[in-house]
Length: 134
Picture (cartoon, helix red, strand yellow):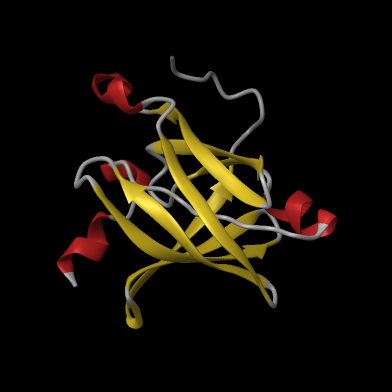
């Protein structure tokens, strides 16, 4: 599905993460580059789950989306976080997302209703001293 191809930070989409256990929070909380390396999202605990905001963009022309909340909702399901949303500012649309921590990376699977129509990306931790936008 073409619209799922836009679920990247390069096109200003991002991750939805959720956690209920402290160890899971530690595994997903932090700063992550998208799979292209053109944007980064800060992920933190937010209410009963996690949320994330765009905090760095390689292309300064897109700074208008800096600080945009692009992930939210969801719950822990096994080793993953599911039933949350990921927002694409470019499309003005939310998608479903499943996030699985993998060491210093996150496996991000965006989908529109059905996981049969999904796109999977790997996001890597960014250095904590990354110069933030805004």
